[in-house]
Length: 163
Image 1 (cartoon, rainbow, N blue to C red):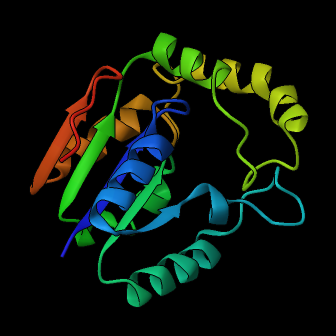
Image 2: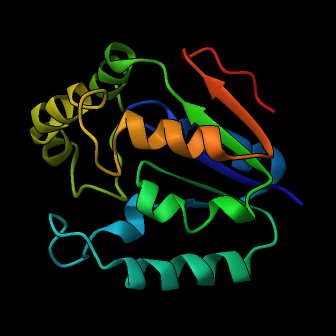
């Protein structure tokens, strides 16, 4: 069985890598963005309890999976069930460049225009990664990675070798 968790800053390549690994190994894929935010008001985080139910259901329904996101509070719910942890940490400049060239994500935005209207806010968010201390921060991600005692990999560039 394969159970992989991928995390990192916005724009680090989590979804791209998850999609590649999902296709290569036939893994069910859960993007935590799809359950972290309220469907009716996507600017409001859902409660951890609500998200935990959805994560639990996903894990129960899938023997082989890949879960990806930037939410350490949610990642902590799955990390002990993971066989492999992948930390994408290419630096803020690469994350920003990735976001600028990111294709439309229809599961997050109603249109490419809506996605692009959010780009300035996203870039400002990315620039705060190394200085903030919340569940989205480099500090929280580093702690998650360092405390994981099983198989783990950290990538510090966009040059990634599939497992």
